[in-house]
Image (cartoon, rainbow over all chains, first blue to last red; front, side, top):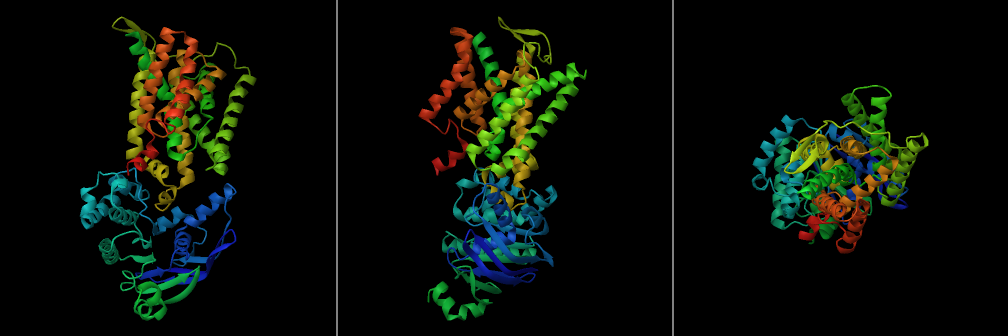
Length: 248
Length: 288
């Protein structure tokens, strides 16, 4: 479904991703693990097309020079330079890191914004499904998103992604800053969504413990370079991964 | 009683002037300093369409609104797009475009007091002992209606929701397929069209002059700065404050002191609360 080949991304002279390749098959759940500044977010931005937009805007105002080499194929077509809204239309939806909700808007308004490209009937149908999945959000639906807790904001962010009707759902550090209990809830939700909506999911995380047991395959990156890849159980058995990400 | 009514109308005028400027700024963060030029441009355009092309009033108004919208969109693509995000450059560039546009009218001989727009309704009404012409009543009504329209538009249409999304977080908006360039261009267009609407409503009270454009920009800025840039509640409160202050000044002192009121208001608010009375962007940060 998705194939990233020899992707290299530079911010000025700093190398954020170095010759990174990966492939994702339909309905897989793939984990991207790595510490801070490993290049996880850059990879997500490259796949979702945000990087293309950021690059254009930086170029216009003479800011940071961003260069990208390599290619990204999605459903057999090259999308390396396709603009982000076109990718959303084709089903690549990114949920950015740090609970990306519109803080000044109410929960309902956030969800309506997320359905920008969708017809009203689709939004309505998805909301019926989604609000049943997150009873908390249903209760808070008139509250300003900025006043909710981090966990609630993350749930909202995920539901917003679902409203945008993804086929390939990119989750960038969804567990960041959440308590272990909420982390488990988020992971359970992701699994539920995956089976209900037959999604293909790509999830990045620094903290591997809640992620490793559930993923089909994983890639570990450090300093923009792929260091280990393998199936979930393989990674859990790998001594280096164990030491670095599971703390044992 | 006179102060009350005329103060209200003056406030409505200020609110109308500030609305378009505020809409564009609130959504895209672009301070459109060509706003006064668009106001003057609309005035002369309607005048030309009515008097030189002998078109009807409403058709001229419609054409002018559409053209003002297009001018706003054009300014975005031609000028602002490549400097977006650099506030100072945006101000200088749009101000430059504005001055060029306004002074072009002077160059082509649009000077003097023969240029005026017809009122929508002629005639007067009496409220108590005060006589008010219908155009001023119309301004009050339209200020309320347009505020309502903008409020509903930004909350219940796709474009309006895209406006609110871009205003809050451009990159997250992008992840839902909201094209930021297009949305910002539309916000410039809507802001300009609102400015044009205010010109069509307000200009019948006096003459269309090039200098009027500078006053409009100054008043719009004063209201937006006092109210807090990007806040619609702030606009209402600030235009009320400045509006009544101006009317009282004109009533108790002399008319030519009026212009000072907005300048003093800007100076005062910048020393006391620089983010404005109701700065929306800060609301959450201050509370959480």
